[in-house]
Image (cartoon, rainbow, N blue to C red; front, side, top):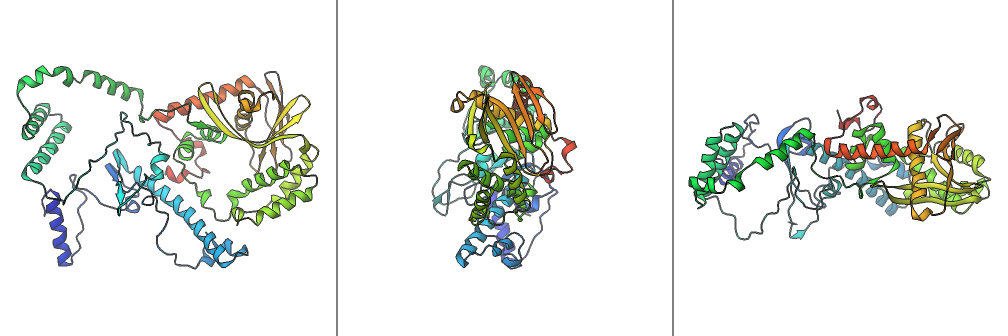
Length: 494
């Protein structure tokens, strides 16, 4: 059909173009290359995958795409914006912003699909310039942690040398070199060592280097594969599949990340490492933002120490007019604010911190997060975390969250002098909050469903989760099959 070099292939394509013909390629040939879109690759696997255009505004694309077939007023992704009383320009900007958010989530999923088509080798490429303009690497590159451009056992960074001038076809020497390289690879796969050495020496001779027997014996120290072979065998035996080291002092673990790993290591990988969207993120009704909205209302209310429930509702109404909360689902919000007021109206004056961020090292691991509220009580401080939603929180989930906050207050300099003595999960859609009292090392359950424990047990649980995350980072995150049915990330594993 055509030769194996690039110039012959281009001539072949030009001939079909002149004839106005379409040609369906045969993909069964093991020596063939399949050129396809990411969409077309779904469900397929290949030994080697080359993913191109990993550059800013190339992949992910934030603009463009096919225009929707239905008008915006009927599009479930944006039709809620038409009920917000926005002016024409504001509405246009809000629709554009919403669609860009959906576009990024879709592009992230496509990138994940593309990368997971590779069984043995994945190559990510980008050009330094596009249309004469320099482009930064894609955000998907930094999401993978591939930013230091160092070489690891399974990852190699390559940078093409600058070239200039017109493209010229391969010379006869270039063609022969490529043939020998392919023959060398084939002989290695067939375990034909003598033939492999013959191809290697032939190649060296073609490029003008010596090929005598003396070279092999005199340079045996640099050729001897013993050390490298042992290193590779040890790595295979250890089960390490990711040569990127886990940087425990810089990889930040939050309570949410720890709870995600505790529920399912695979879910942790998707959320905290790859930052993949779930199908909940695609809910245009704003249901997934409801919890964040309630937190913001309560944060503002506690900060100004509201004295009436009316002030709390005024804050809610004011926030709903802001573009940030456009389309948020407010079902049940009024009732949650009433529950909050009944439980907290006499305690708000004692507040010390609201939505306080922390970042600290503990036993060689870095933890971070945000504490909803810290109040002064008679014998120390109370740590309060708000929970929206009707599903219950397991004892382990409660201890991971409240325990990490307690360790943060004890360890971080910003909380110096504070002594946590009470811990509360304020379950705003439940009959009672979960309340605990710390006495010495004991954490005693005072109200709500759960159990008591000790600070020592909580610290051990948190550190074991961190150590397991570090282990799985290099050995692979496995899914917990018990949690698959209701998991919002299950379509990545199917």
